[in-house]
Image (cartoon, rainbow, N blue to C red; front, top):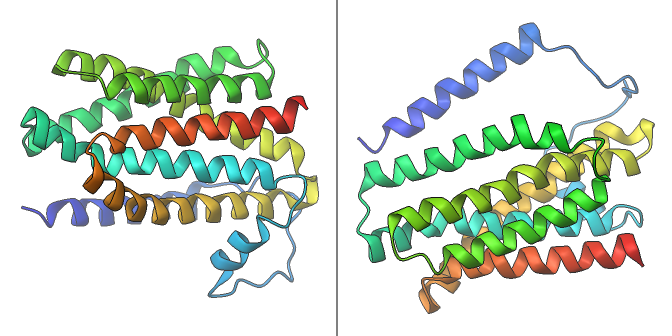
Length: 231
């Protein structure tokens, strides 16, 4: 039934807590023992993202890309149901396929790119790939093309996420690694809130906005990044 996914997610969350509690080894060697965690820390982190002159462009890129990808994950299923008559199992199979593609891409392609290309070149390439993937996916008329074009989208997302995190880590000081990733997480969380809110309005205008939003925002991210890193 419809409550099963929530129970399943709860079980996975508890399993993650157990693994972190008993098997995780802390990698941050610059821990501040006097640091306080506040109830509104996420909001404070989100606010501070735009005050960091070194990293605010990266955070802006992350925000735009995650908004676009979230619109896709939340609302492309509307098009699958409306235009292709997908039922619940088919939608589940589709998003499972996306997840498997991202796993393979990050396990094979991402590893091979390290040392071959500069991080900034890979990030720019991934944004362009994602934009092309979203655009092509909006033209798909059969299930075959949906799955083939989705591989391109998964490639863009699968490459972008680890490389932008690596680039942000490189730009941040050793003392602020933990804080920086906390800010990045807050930016991503904010984008995941804005994505559904934006998507709800856009899809009411045109169902293809579930994909056009991803293409447009990925392109804007690429332009912002190019201006920052090459000018």
